[in-house]
Image (cartoon, rainbow, N blue to C red):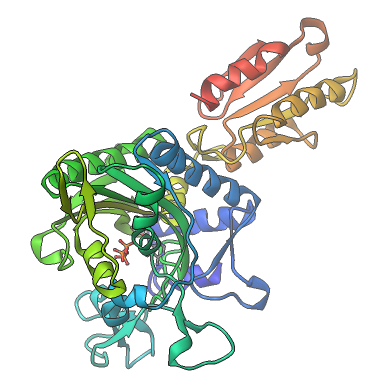
Length: 447
Ligand code: ATP
């Protein structure tokens, strides 16, 4: 993929093993329909990506597990799904209109445009020339549009650059309709848009992406406790679904890195082939957002705590994750090249296809039996049927897709009413009675 190639490594330089790994993963993503360039037939659109049949299942599994673990399995978090376009006062109150900017410089040699804070040793990341940059300018990252037929200042709207402001704007609605009591959270998954100066590293820095955010409202005195709680919860979440611990880091922000309103912030970072980078941020946002929205909307968003008989503005602990960055981390983490095969070792809960069914020889009623098993499994899990080519090749194709189980119906099946289940990672094979296959797989897929 040329767009990606141009962004890893400097032109004319040979790639290091990490760059090669990334390059191979990007081509696997394209070849096996995980991720395509957006509008590829027109040359693409920088910073935008499309998920193909395997990619959409992978990303959906990640979002659904986040939703299940953050909202459905808890009694103290409610979900919302807010509009992308909001009254532009929201973005004045949040501070985005005034200060959601990145510092930008252009290279005078190759005309490349970069974030000033991404330049190392005053050297251009594209052409390598030194000290040849324009002055730093500040660039607002919000996409601006107009609502309705008139394009004047009164119709300005923005594509939301983060999902959490919809949550703050609905704080009162949830308090008044859902019988929630502090401490409680409101969660949302949805698209966010940022006109990034230099989208790069595949889907890592995109202009259109999805966030998984939760605002947890608590008594100010309990904020440090909940901040620690959510850092632990969120770090463990990635481990639970198979991310390797040695590649996952929790980095506490230094005081001078903190946003002016934040009392604490930590990033969950992952060792990507292009470097260690942020997957998720967990911040103690204090009472900044509710106070600002109270001020700008003239609606009192303070909370009356009946237990304490006290009115106050709750503090907010925010774990804010990117669904696309998480998807990329799960892909990188699962990717392995072995002598005989390339394999994606996804956790079974993350894997886009859960099982593949192969009739081994096309005779003796085998396809009918295989189809029967396929139809049973398909009702419950995303299952793939493949009756083409040598079985070794069929295994390889599923290894590359990250399918944890392959089930073969062979010459013995009609005699012993059993099938062979082959495990992707160990390649070990178990002989299982046909009527026990669902039970057997459920142990792994629903554990
Ligand atoms: P960065 O420093 O990498 O620009 P950020 O600190 O601005 O990220 P936040 O505003 O904290 O990011 O957004 C929360 C999460 O949203 C990030 O941790 C990341 O997972 C995701 N995210 C932010 N910007 C992008 C982007 N351009 N492309 C993909 N995901 C993004």
